[in-house]
Image 1 (cartoon, rainbow, N blue to C red):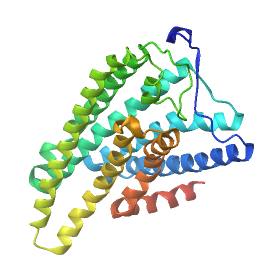
Image 2 (image 1 turned 90 degrees about the vertical axis):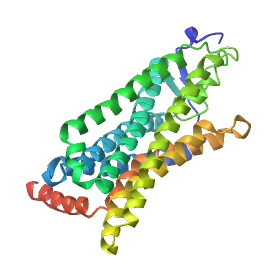
Image 3 (image 1 turned 45 degrees about the vertical axis):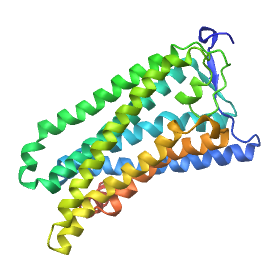
Length: 310
């Protein structure tokens, strides 16, 4: 294929050729997808139902659960459908939409995690000013800013990616339309057009990462000054789930996009893609619920209520 105008569809990475292994892949992805739906759905329902959880921290957590649901729903169902029907195809429009929505949701999640670190900083370091600095209107503005920035970034990134002429065929070496894999299909001379956006992306990621690190340095310093062990434990309990989610996000997403091309291989790319696109949405609800007694108490009250209504 000489250019992108002649491409009507893309071919995603084929999973093992035997029917049994294809069905195994479908079953594994289905189990993970259902776990993500259940975990994030319960978090969203519990926070919306229990008015005691209508606080800034849980408001941002609800947004995070929505983003995780959207991110895994953008990639996994199409891969399961292809395995079930023994096909590799995804339409050109479908690929564009998949790239846009996935970048939109992942970028928004990163901005939201940065905002959540500020929430924890104010709660721990400036508790007397918490309601003033993070009132309901401020929280809405911060969340809206994260979603808007993610939308604009995804729009710019997607438009720039698919404006490149594609000279290397239409086979994407990934189970979903991933930007690095699509860039491999572009003409070598046109790849430089994407370079400035990649540099800007790295700078943006670095700035957010620095803000998160600075917030947690201040948080840990404040926590260590708390005289009682019980107070320190309670403060850490509200911060560690968020820190664990940030660590999981950074340790899976960044290596997939900044690894040197010399160590790139289809199997490594596939493993990294599964780690950052499939695992976090299913694991994040577990991380937050394990160390959060308020959330567990509200959930234990919500589920019996459902059974009584049936």
